[in-house]
Length: 180
Length: 183
Image 1: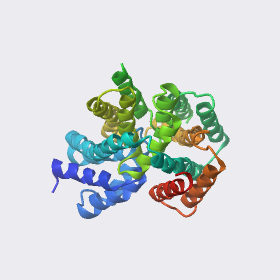
Image 2: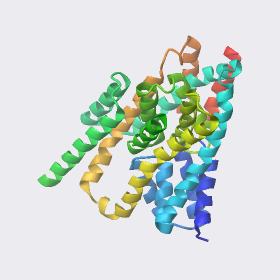
Image 3: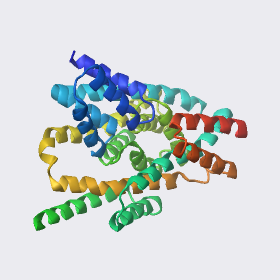
Image 4: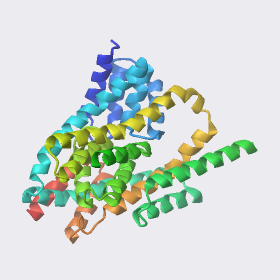
């Protein structure tokens, strides 16, 4: 049955049981929405997913907003968003409260000394995987390298880079459209 | 005023996040570590590890955690730390909500708009640059104090890249290694 409570509960479940970010969530959401509850078709879901990935913000939240809106309008999108944000908020809050008390514990520090380099690897792997999947041309290549160098070495804010590139891309697209 | 700063910092982070959670980390890192100096690069790495091991999107997890620890580092009471946590989390979600909400209302029209498509297309290589920068910024002398840490990095890289180990498994194994080697 389609109700605000069911929608809320669906996203509470999704975000409680998916560990490791957006992509891990996809299979769980699809299973509930398409297979179990039959609230939408597979095609509809894939469509929403494609948009949620490209839009600004977090894919998990974007998907919740989109699904909520499609199913139950504005209120639906608010309810779905709350459902997806509340569980991680409560869990992390609890961890923050406990963990900050043990921050200076030597055993904990030793464990995290081992974990830190692994975390760097966890960020490096998707970077390389995305770079391998991307169809490169020289504009894209320069864009990626300059972005990396500006942020990492010159400490330029990523926000400015996104803004400038977005505006230039909009003008280029407009110009191409005009020529056709 | 720290609460106000926390709010607008995370609001802008939410607004400019393209390409999902990992790319968001670059923005959070730049604001929280480089610009404001609220937490150190190592503490930020720890937060990423905790966010990876707990349910929920990494962007929300890190906003919640950072909101709490920033206020705590200023010496405020636990109740205010919870308020900081709440503030950072809602601030990071709010722009996403506003933007996506309007786009799903206008989607039918935007879908065929070449300017919209062109902007989204240009963000793809940008996201790779963002992730590469996040990786480089995390490589600090504190995170890599000795050659053992580079071995852990190489091992974690190998099992994630080629053996498709989950982030949790990788972090748990690295934690065990850390305990055995450093404790």
